[in-house]
Length: 327
Image (cartoon, rainbow, N blue to C red; front, side, top):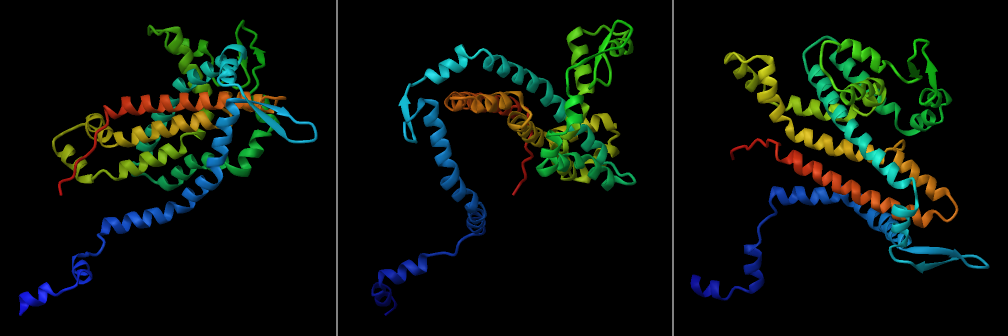
């Protein structure tokens, strides 16, 4: 009888018996798609048409039609060729922007890691110090950031006007120290002029470095707090010094966040409002007939940024340690 009942079962009943409830991972995946759905819809509806038009403009010329409107004429790679070989300032500005990035990124990442290690120590007022270092991030965004950009005093401080110091040396309004002072500090050490100028530039640019290190500092703090205290206790029992613990335990454990912060800093530096390349492209766009040329410049700049990000991620990934948890 049982065999006869099993044979007479309908296919729908067999499918219902085979169907299993969704696993926890699948439920989490569905919830994740639900959270990112507004961004996906906004990207498809708003950003994709803008991206398409930008690519189209970079390969065309725009001519105004009598009576209103415009006409697009396909010119191929002419705009890209003009940006590279005709425009005298784009390549030079691009090289200066990349050079500034090479100097700024290590300084920002190292400074944020240094401050995160200090603020992770147990001390009185630790929460207040963390808030103080994150305040510049809040002040440099939104309405405060737009007010700061129109600050005349800040424009004067960022000017390149030279002030005569009276002793044959010169100084600018933004300099905290000069190369002569650094040279006196390292007078007993053999140090090259390029490294000397790099140190002077970092010290004089400390305000901008602090402003751009807040997010990275919080990410490093989260990574440092995720390290189990038992690991440090074991190192202390074994007699390891703080210096050895940092290089053997702390740095490898937070190396994934070093990769994340480096990529984030590269993107932030390339897309910031005060980036010289972004300002140059914006000025070209504001000029008569410069919208198609600026589109070509922007796409070349975008491809260069993606190449640099891929190179940085590839190099740092080779030295990144990922802790494997046994299941």
